[in-house]
Length: 176
Image (cartoon, rainbow, N blue to C red; front, side, top):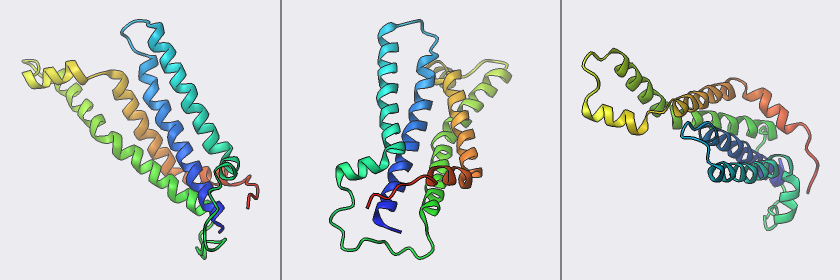
């Protein structure tokens, strides 16, 4: 494996993570129930466009970025000795890492929302002061759904990492 292949995998991995993270952080902002605000909508659309452009460059224009920033220059050898590890193998490792990161970053908050919603439904005396304050400040169905979707997509990435790795490592051009 060449050093360019390694950098290509790392850059595409960051691009995929950037896209997923942007998508799931903006969905609650677009579906807010606080009313329509053209300023916040325009800021969210601008944020989505900028992050979408960054993700596009990182995923689909990887070779241009490598040439532009001369990432491969200054190394002692042209190849990295990985024996049996190929580009697709690095993608698999990166996708496993992204899937686990999506699950671990969202599981605690998702379970907290589940607990508070369950407690709210079955409590005969209502919620205590602390739980009530937590529900009023933090409990939002949008974030509950977004956390659940992040966990679901993390599981999907973990179960289909071979297919996704093959999808992103098929059409590579030789930069070096």
